[in-house]
Image 1 (cartoon, rainbow, N blue to C red):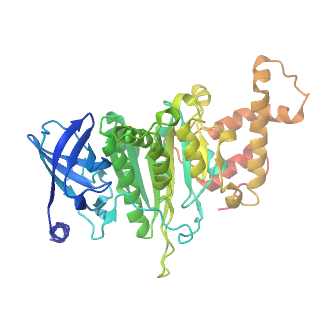
Image 2: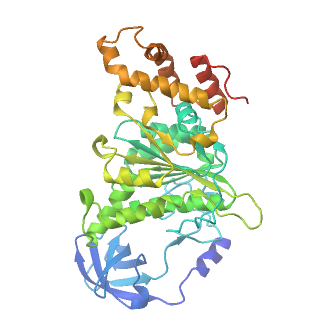
Length: 447
């Protein structure tokens, strides 16, 4: 009954109509009352095969330029356009846990309809005020040794995972989804391969992981608007659970495909291409999306402030970690994890390059007994990396440098420490106990 009441309340008290006047490539041109023509507004076109949902992405004079969320077959000149001038909204609820949704919040898992919440959330919400949001929370146990030890995170922090194709970022995401110490996990699969979406839900999450997760997916064959909307819905869903005072882990794979979708939309709307063909709107939309993750606004009632800890994958083009999207995202987030193809080819997973990965909160979260362990391990890893070519060629003479000698002795156990099976979980105390044992530097973190 409540769902029916909510739907009745959302009915418009007036209907605004327009007409299709042209169709050019991906764009539908329509005219109608100015009150219903606003940037970002949705519209529904009557077609000979039913209807087509669209969004207004620009204007040419007084003509609205619309892009579809689906196929345009059956659209005719003069077809009726029903305008929805209000910005798109969704009503998340606790019933979304355990479900798989598309970019419109419609179920894809065949488990029946969804119960809608009472409070509407804007699909493209604004980040909390910089001075009104809470500070970062305490340390978050990610369940992955290399991250807990060298790239730690606090609740509400945002981290990027930078990797080329086939280097193992999806496997790393699966490890985090299973082992991370979070109340709720919201997963956005943006532009993924169709087969991977079901495999991720059934094989990676499993029944236990799925109970505390919401999966939002639009595959690579979906229109650009649908892929972009799925990214926004992922953050909107995370904001709903954050507002319940929960600690949310938001995993998005990938920001690059969100940027590609926005580029496609911008080019179709007539924006000029800039660096590598990306339009200016891409670099405007990235911070608007990524800044929505983080700690929530400080609650006036004194209740617990929820957080959104964001892990966003970036698919670097041609393994170039300085390409435009990677460069822009790195400047927005609170740290980055670099995955190396060379490490993956050696068979060590997760293939994280510790020396190139940085967490901007690392100095604040390490305990006094942990800092020297991490610094020492980094020193030996760096020394070995500097001399690796000479060592492999047999040109290094044992005994010429005590630090390098120690680095060679520790290389094999440190490599074993950095590697981890995808179904294995390692908490923070165990991580530092293992590192202390390898380095011979005393005991790890006290439980």
